[in-house]
Image (cartoon, rainbow, N blue to C red; front, side):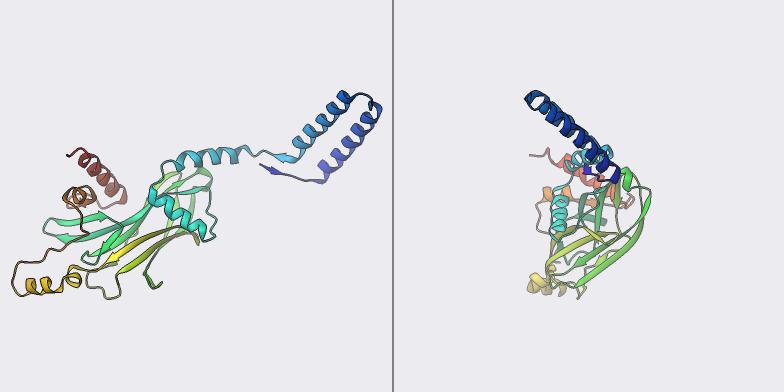
Length: 274
C-alpha cells in the first residue's frame, strides 16, 4: 500500500474540495450535511491517492506462512544479516543454513551436520535452503559462500550461478574446505556468510575445535608408537546423538536433499528410543 500523487488527482481533488466547501457553506446550519460532505471528500481522496497493490499483500501473506517453517539456524542467520544493514529480497527466504562435515573411515564416507567442526574431519561444506516466490523466480542469481575464521580472514570462497525456480531450492557447493592437517584452519569461532547477487542473506556462526592429536598429544603419541590407536573423533556426542546426526553415504547419492531427508529419517527413528 502506498500513496500516489499525480497532477490529475491533485486538480480533481482541488475542484471537489471547492465544490464541497460551497455546499458546506450553504448548509452551515446543518452539522449532518457538513459531516456527510467531509466524509465524501475523505473517501474520494483515499480512492484517488492510495494504491492498494493487492499483489504485495499476497506476497506478504505468503512470506508470513513460509516464515513459520524456517529453521532456528535460518532465523538467527537472517536476523544477523539484517543487523548488518542488509535489506533482503522479500521474494527470497532463507529456510535453512548450516554445515556438513565429511570423513572417510572403516564404514566408508560419512557426512554429519554440525555446528562444531573438528579438525579430525576431512572437510566441511556449507549449504542453504531457499524458498523462492514466483516474482523472484525464473532468473539467474549469483550465490557466494564464505567461511571466515576467528581472525576475520576468509578461508573459503565458493561462487556459483544458479537458476532460481519457484518453490523450495536446496543449494550445496561443489567444493569443501579441507580440515585434516590443514594448517590454515585454526580453532575458534567462525562465520558462514551467504550472499545472493551481492546481498548478504545469512550469517551463521559456528566453532572449529582442535584435532584429537592437538587436544591429547600424549595419547596420540602413544598410539603412533604402537599402543592402542586413538579414536578419530568428531564432536563429543552420545551414541544416540551420533546415530541421529551422522549419515553414511556409501550407496546413496550425495545431494543436499538426500542428506537432509536421511537426517530427518534418522531423527525420527532415534526419537523413540528410551
